[in-house]
Image (cartoon, rainbow, N blue to C red):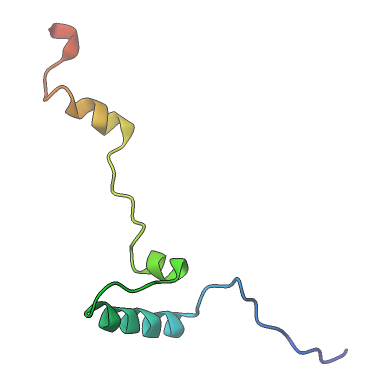
Length: 71
């Protein structure tokens, strides 16, 4: 068995401790204005949370509780 050095995977997300440090740093920097953030870190911070209505909920909201079949 040979001992081959392993190269870090550049596409892997940050480990947990690195992510926590990055998030704290971004929070501090953002106090002064906009900050460019890596998409993986932004995702971990909840920037891409999708809280939109489902198609069924959106359709139901059009009728305000009235049954469209009754008029």
